[in-house]
Amino acid sequence: MVRRDPMHRVWIGGAYNLCARALFRIRIRDIDCDFRLIRRKLLDDIVLTSTSGTICVELVRKLERAGWEVEEAGVRHYERRHGRSQFFRLRPLLVTFGQLLQLWVRVMVVR
Image 1 (cartoon, rainbow, N blue to C red):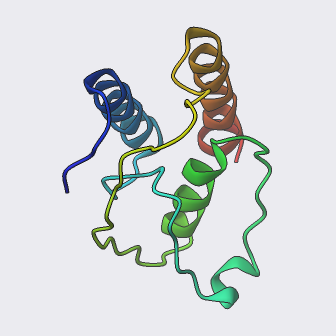
Image 2 (cartoon, rainbow, N blue to C red; image 1 turned 180 degrees about the horizontal axis):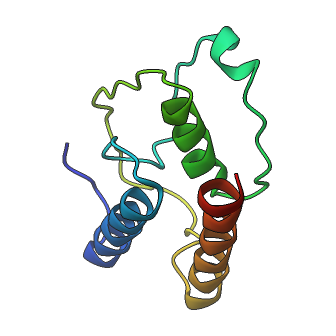
């Protein structure tokens, strides 16, 4: 699927996905795609603790760990017509990286 984003966003997003997949041993390709269709019963036994963008990583990792199969389907990605992303700036990127490491400790080390 072609992303209609500036190259720096594509690279940062790709690096984030690669890092998160490696750290959390997640099989899906695009962890942060926010379009999800999940059966309610799958969420009944999963407790999510993240309150930031890392909740997507936590959700997918816990679903996979519980033995549920996660399937991906292509979605259209449209160009942003208004406003600017607040995420692709240095401070939010550093905060997200820190939150990702904290989540890794909670989910992969402490369990």
